[in-house]
Length: 171
Image (tube, rainbow, N blue to C red; front, side, top):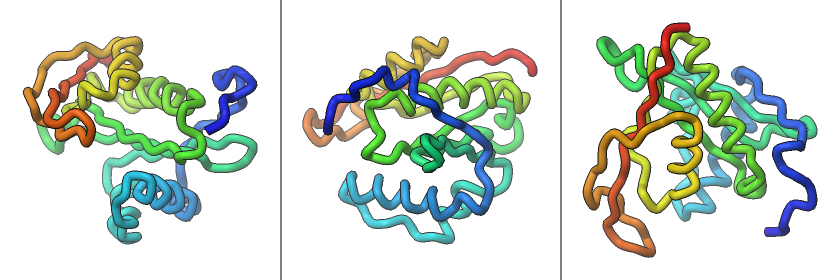
């Protein structure tokens, strides 16, 4: 992958709420991600439910008019846990390493707060994803738990995973 010649954080990135009309873009990104990871292409109906199901708030990130990434904010649990947000992110493989994920993470925290969530949590972040852990810590998340040997890293074997949590306050 070529090294960017400009500061990626200075590149225009429009993050907006996704609509069902964005589904072909989301499907393209998810299929590219699955191919990169060596997995099967996601089934369209399940994918549509994952991104546009009940209580899910999906967003797309556009650069130069092209959808290049997607994320969603949702309650981590139904019922008594519905005040805690969780988010999922997928960046098109060709656009990784350019700050897109970081900018979406910042927006996801803001959106979770705006939507009225009182906290945000990630229950399974592999310790080998040092960049992700550092990003979440920069955004105010704390490691509140360690799950020993729970992630099977292809290169390192069984490694720890972290539980990350941040209070958001009331919107």
